[in-house]
Length: 432
Image 1: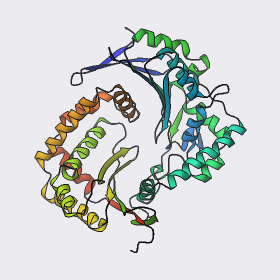
Image 2: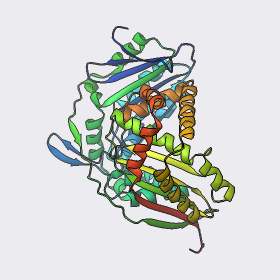
Image 3: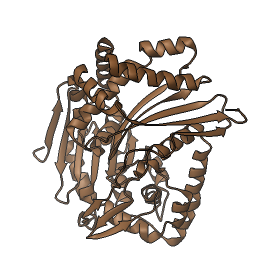
Image 4: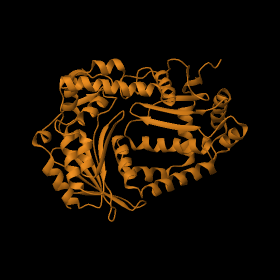
């Protein structure tokens, strides 16, 4: 146990252990005595934003969607389908790629050790050929095409495409048909050797486990070639100017009622800073208090028939971008848009509902503590916050401490003069 450093949260009554290996890989462990299920997440800081980097002093460009493409190929094994291999062990395996990371994970109630060995094994190597890369292009192109038929996806894509001018958040994580078709084996090999290196990766394990045994398994199953991988790169992110593309974009699709989303582009918060997490939680709580299902505003709009239960509010913060989205399904979407605008102006003028803020803050605290009974939730949340530059325990401490006066100042700073874009999908044949 002396190889581990521990981090504790008195509110959750949980402790997470950390060990940094000589090769640079960070290993985290959440011990949960009495839990039958066990989880492991093996991730790299490589996602859809990593389209341009400085590598060994040279500027290198990758195709849009390369991280997602590589995730597909990591799952391919010369001898056996990776999904089948885990299934035979009684484990369920999957993976995801987002803007800043790619994560491979499994859950199991049996055969944990061979499952962990398998996870470490298949992520440490790739099987790339010109033939299987070409074959995968067809699969990914079908995936992209299926998204195009999803009205909710199209509403969001149209929104972000017009809200941002340069930032890669405006691009689909899977890339475009053109970028996928142009991707080469050599580009994927370079991406793998650059980003799948120990110092750029993290392993998180949770369950009723012996810490020293977990570390022994990891040490025994890291290849020497993997441990020796080094990579010095710098992510190049384009400067995002003020302004947007179109302020309003409309599309017709086969939907029963109009869908609308309106977004506000805010100045980005510093990525990974503790102050960023604080500001993010301030805005999330304040928006829920003012616009959420229990708010005076929502109930008034619902009773008038302007809103229906599909209404959603989302505040999103990431590397170089911050935005708020209001939206849902409404026959009276023009009135809904005006209502949101008017309520934001009213809050800026009159201030927030202090009692509602405190109620939502307590609700979100209780919800997180309750969700912590789920080992899967804690595992997923750990990776989410880790890849944003935070520790899982930062969340609860931060939300426990935020105050309405400071939250209102943050709200004023980002909503005083934001760029606005509206995305609408109407039923086919509906007249404007």
